[in-house]
Amino acid sequence: MSDSEEGAWIPWFCKQRGNEFFCEVDEDYIHDKFNLNFLDSNVSNYRRSLEVILDLEPESGSDPPPEAELEQCAQKLYGLIHARFILTNRGIDLMLEKYQKSEFGICPRVFCQRQPVLPIGLSDNPGEDLVRIFCPKCNDVYAPRSTRHAAIDGAFFGTGFPQMLFMVKPEMRPKRTKQKFVPRLYGFKIHQMALRSLSENIAASKDQQPGEGDSN
Image 1 (cartoon, rainbow, N blue to C red):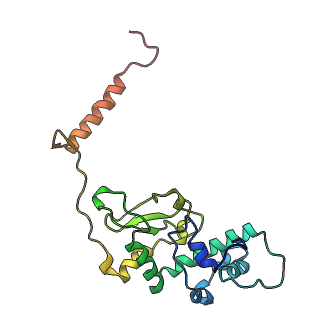
Image 2 (image 1 turned 90 degrees about the horizontal axis):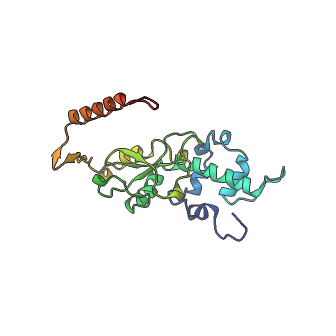
Image 3 (image 1 turned 90 degrees about the vertical axis):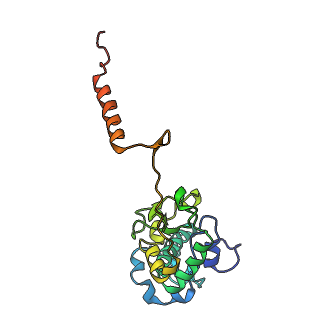
C-alpha cells in the first residue's frame, strides 16, 4: 500500500478491485498467536508481513525487503489467515452477509435459477489451485464469472468453508434442484440407446472411408 493511501491496511485491501470475495478479518483474531500457528512456514517475511497487516511500526533489525515483495507476502499471509477466520462464527456471519447479497455471484446453471454461490478452494495448499464458486443447489463448482476473481488463490478460502457455513446455518441451505436437462428432438426424448447407435454408426462409417492416396 502506498503512503498516499489512508486508513488501515485490512479495509484497504478488501476494498481493492478483485478482492470482493474477502471479508475483513478482525484484528483481535490476528493478534491471537494461536490462530496463526504454523503460518510462518508458508510465508516469507512473515514478521514484517504481519506488521503491514496490523499497521504496526516495523521492528528495528535487518533491512526490509522491497515494498512490492513485502506487499505480496502480506497479501498471501492475509489470505491464509482469512481461510481460518471464515470458519469461525464471526467469519461465517460476515461471509453470510455477502452470500445473501449475491456478492460472490450466482450459479451459471439455468435450473439453479440464479442461486447465490460461495467461494471455495479445491486445495488447502497455497499455489496449487485458484478459487472456484460452489453452488449449494446443484452441489457443483464452477470458475468465477469475473476475470478479476480468476487469479485468487483457492487456499485463501479453503476446501471446507461452504460445508461449515451450512452446518452452522442449516436454515440457509437451499433445497437441491431436481430439474435436469433432457435432450429432445421434435418434442420427443432421445433414448440413450439411440445416441449410442448413432455414435457407433458414425465410427463405423469413418473406419470404412478409404485412406488418402487410395485408387478409386
